[in-house]
Image (cartoon, rainbow over all chains, first blue to last red; front, side, top):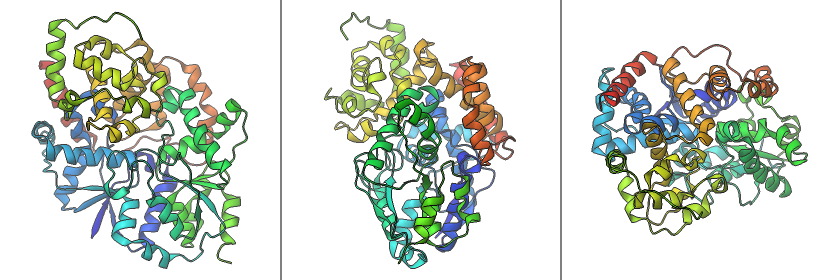
Length: 294
Length: 196
């Protein structure tokens, strides 16, 4: 199977390390992933909140291009893009009025979308299409010394679910990290929200949600948080200083992407992991991980 | 919240209910049993004027203005916990998006919701101009022209500088966002909205 890779806006710059490590990991695992060109923003939920039904034409433009190219499946690393794109596909298939409105709008740009291109998250492609055995085979430096909090967050599994696992207690991220040799902690907030965009509009609310997560994972001994979402990453990592001063705490825990952890275990170089682009110091974790397997 | 509610004027009710019909899944709201699972699941419920359960109750009972003027839909963080737990399979998150859309259309955006409202507007403006997100442009527009609080932008400089020095803050605008297509797609949509 050939996959069409939709990077998404965050992965262009603010989460460049996610993009680079995802592509490197896919290559190592032998996934055929071709990068899409000339894509537009998925519109997140903002386009739909402003325009409702016609708003689905924004993500659908990407899907129309993919369909035109003959792509079988789109793959993305951002849960928000995943939802926006897959929701557009679902609604074009399930609701005739959405299909009509979206295709009328796309028609103005000489495009059309018949709803035939599913969008999937890279994690589910690795877990289901390749299988964890393939992941285990690729491991060169097992992460045996690491205690990890696998943080799925909200939008990785909700509302799409299915192959991504349980809405309440998803484990595929845990199992993937265990396949790398890491130990994952059991905690209650693995699928709770980090506050998302509220970090900009209502920071007090979002910081409390982040505090809940940081407090539980550190109390349970995690040395690092691993996420599959660019927004979770930036909220949990980038605002630790503010959260510390607000709650009089001393959190200092790295937050990295699952693809960076995979690349680390596969022995990929820093140029493909881009750990130095993380805001927290990942050095200690890298050191611990390097001692793994003994 | 004990208070007197006012029924929507018939014209408003007709207009809003007609628009609501077009929205995927909105018919499921009729199935609401007012169990409160949504309200109990919501991570930000204490910041809302009305809980998600109350919002659905208000719409069903015809108290549309209360629902549209509330801050609830704007506080939602889109975590979908209510949606996946709802025993009546109501797409509650989507229904709150619908309440944003309707509030904008009816000119009833809560004054208390200026921040999330401006965020939506300014984000979509960036999309309309460049086809893709450009964080720097967005932040300037949001803080200076959106919520008109340039001082808050100054407060962001430390954070922005951190990202910048890590090569994670885009200085140049995106160039390849298919913006010509998007303009055609969106202008047709927006024209038909005006005609309506």
